[in-house]
Length: 389
Ligand SMILES: Cc1ncc(COP(=O)(O)O)c(C=O)c1O
Image 1 (cartoon, rainbow, N blue to C red):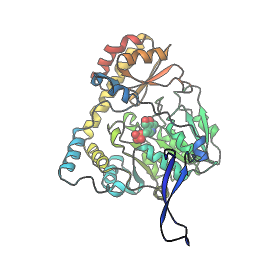
Image 2: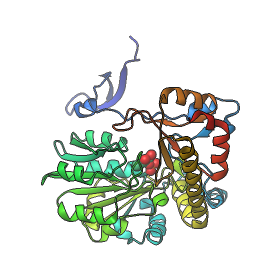
Image 3: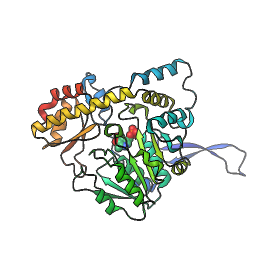
């Protein structure tokens, strides 16, 4: 019999059985996913990376589908990582527990005290940690849509109930809809600001008001794109014990490949999270890279200025052609096309990869495109400008 469908595990012999010998026991496969996990809708992570890398001329492709930074991170990141490796300290030790040096650097950057911060393996890890710690089966979670769908997987994996609310326009923060969906027993509210994919911002006043009015609801404010919009509710974590703010080094800082994120919240919420937090989840190079990136805010600000100027080029470009384009406060734009599938195909044929968002509520016919530097934007429009008519 083939072992192909069996997972062979060593198991201890039951007490009283002959000797202390170990035996191999066959576990049937598939073992069967837990019912809660079987019931959820998996996140569809479609990236153009493999398609781009398969092309001989891949360096000329535009990867504009995942809202990543379109340039390499600050040179200080490479220097710091190289210096670490050259010191011969190697990678055989576990990373610094709890990323304490990075936490200290983040105190300066965020203005939030160290006991309000937790560093995570990307901000997805922070979002999942929040759901694993604070949600249980049957809890009610309010999510304005369209938004970052990956969060829904973390909610569903806890068996919690999702209540989505949709505004008249996908580009409206829909605070009235949120208020209608909220009840006394809403366990968690998920806000993304700037929102992905529509870019609206929740002002600190709105966030503070919601925190005040729903003191027994956890309010998660996902600020993955904060640097581009420069509006933040992070300071409010000192005031509101029910607020959690998540952020990342994957977007404006250009460290998506290193997987570093963080969250800010009251020390009480942080101590709850620490019950299952993995203090070694952020790898050594990620910690070093993030500290180096924070040490070069001029580089960050130059990139932010480039993205801002690019958005003006795009605003003018689409306005001149009468194309419905939403120039968001983040590093992406949303464009509505009469035949989005055909446009996506034509873009890909010319080595430009953007994200189809036409299946999202209120975004029929829409694609989302990352914004890079002004030089990249001009070259992009030279290559594919004629497709947007
Ligand atoms: C709104 C939002 N939150 C969180 C993330 C996850 O980012 P990361 O896990 O790389 O920090 C993303 C990534 O696209 C996002 O768009």
